Image (cartoon, rainbow, N blue to C red; front, side, top):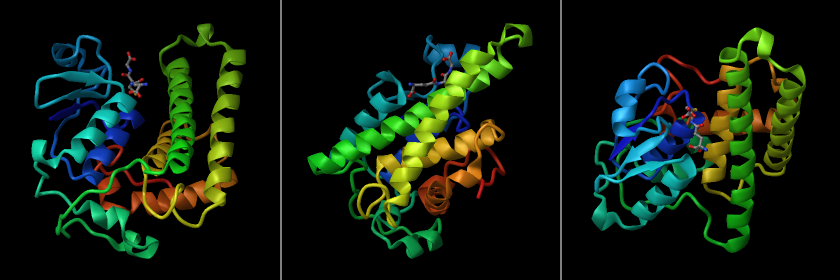
Length: 247
Ligand SMILES: N[C@@H](CCC(=O)N[C@@H](CS)C(=O)NCC(=O)O)C(=O)O
């Protein structure tokens, strides 16, 4: 299985972290949708990151669809031998928050994986809501980047940027409220896709558009992000080389 795309894309990074958390073996091809268009389009002519090339040859797009595939894959271990070179996902999922801060690449006593989506319908709905907020924050940050970097200055439209910023802030306000309600992970006592997506979004915005969000207004989200970024699954998928998560 190959994951195509750079980890400075939050959509690629949430997939990579999920694959590490689920202990699924994959090859990462860090191709840029801008700088490596030719090579990318040979794999996926739509040039969309993330792209996942399945072992069956099927080419998938869209992080949420890819995650739905890999959740299914993790449920069928006979189809997908766990990668023995990777960390035990239970390090991430079952340890206490304090232990999670201490987990180190190298522990490796894989027995079984925990799904990244909660099992009960109410927790499942809570996770979907939070994932929606995190994805919205990613989408709005990307819109601001494209407006700033791709559109000529004289074509930029301030009312549009203001609208996008309002939407971005609303997403982080809602995530902060949810993070402040729990002293554990966002949904229950185990890391879920809600935590992965929210924390990936948060670091992406701070990295790509550091001036648009008043980070100090989001202490609970920042604390959640610190715990998440300390996990081996997150550390194995840094946003870029030598990158350090914002505190
Ligand atoms: N909803 C998609 C968004 C993916 C996305 O927008 N990826 C960006 C990279 S961050 C991309 O491929 N941009 C190139 C383009 O859209 O032309 C997902 O969740 O995967």
